[in-house]
Image (cartoon, rainbow, N blue to C red; front, side):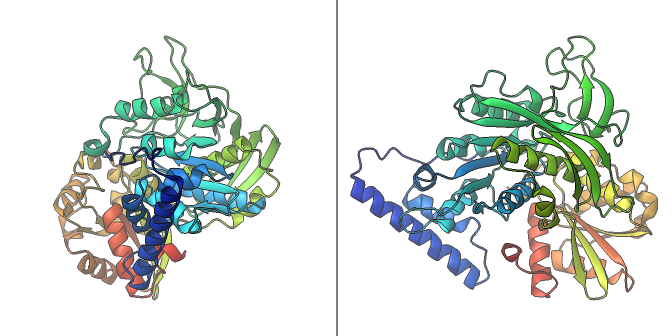
Length: 480
């Protein structure tokens, strides 16, 4: 857990405060430019880290003086894509947007938005400030940002050694929401039983988004679902339909707890048969009904788009340019990112919990043919130490279609063991801990015109993408 190193400088002379702020911003800008020049980073977190060392109040000072509308987005899954979609809608409506677009969502990354976009005097020429924020960081960041809108996408079991149990994360988020002023708006995913109960005692306005269609989904939640019992009385939920994990149309038969009326709701949905999109949906909004084509595949991107539209509604943005905005949205790096490697295709997917892994497996299962896999996990601080969640990944469903699987990273043995228990023959499983050697081994197995599917944790995704960038297959992630 991060600690807040801000201090109260109310006794510091105004001139000295301004000088320290200017020094912090200039030092941060120089650090970011140097990182890009020497190809050691894109200025996504280092500027904020350096600036906060000099002036711990830099984020609060810059954002506090800005008249821009401020949106923060948090949750276990979907933050980066939801933020991109929200930015696209704001941009299409004619607003100037500043955001941490690359997904650097800890406190230093959030502060980098202020440093990178402000001038040396801390002035921002932005109409909208958009922050994607890690769910463990947001209680520290919100007091400094004072957002107009807070979006919570979902809460899934994720990095128990870092976040703690699901309910401890929920308690921290709920406390943060209850501290918001009445001028703020909270946008909650009504299909998530835990999230829908947030902010009951908050002064801020609450609105809800989600899906209420029965066109897609399953009769019961998947085996790895995190919340299957009522959060009030612990009775088993009844589901009309489950869309992903525990998200769905739920009702407690004992106490009657159920999802709230949705302000922004998907009333009809059709997913692409080939796993590559687009999805076609109809929505009900306070501004009227609309049809929308979402170019990114999967039910999770329907959720992301609905959350982005909900954020636009909360800020009073017009919706007549939403389709244009969606047409311009591209996959964020590592989010089922399609990469051309010579005459072969790579799909790179960042997976960090059972929900995200299972979503990617379902998408690639829709692709024709047998599959070449590269799986890579490492137990660094940012990746988490506990990988017991791998046993909730539904590898058995795709096992018959796997031609070969390379396991990499310092958790390669655990990945290989999980594949063996999914009854994938051992002669199809290869362990190569080194990242670049594993990529070479995996791509070697792919026939000309074929496809390699990579599913990896945060650090391995970054490392693999750096290797691909050096080979000319992709741009630097901050250039996309």
